Length: 226
Image (tube, rainbow, N blue to C red):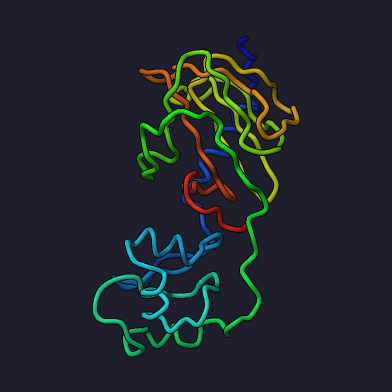
């Protein structure tokens, strides 16, 4: 089955995929070894991206909990840990300790296919993961949601689906042989939505992405709250 492509739908898909890296806080003026917190960040992901432990980041920045705020400047590398290494401009920005636990993600994702991971998440080069399989294998919806794009208007992705879920999450399924659902369809977690193929690429595989508010996140890591 080949779904017809309409320009408005292509523009929607291009917009959704181009949102990577968009943020509301500028990195201008951030000194080497520091990071300014953006919307959607978690302490765990900041530590992972900078090859540090959460405990180290907390120690360097005198954090009493895992709570962080948009715009906060965090030390993420270099030197010995200690209060004197935190920029003075950041000392007043640190949030007061909170006793409430961090909220849980608004969705829980399941695997869209049981194959092995052949390409790992490594942005900006790879904004998702690639999963091996056989041509014609069923691709399953990772969570309940609504299909917001179904087509082949972005050549590098081949026959692609984008599903919007609760909490501003999107999942993308690319290189399919056949699409089994159309735009506007409501799908359930575990429902077959496509058949694996190699459109737009050189081998049979599923390219799977997870995005929160337009920004890619690691599909195999813990999901941040919206």
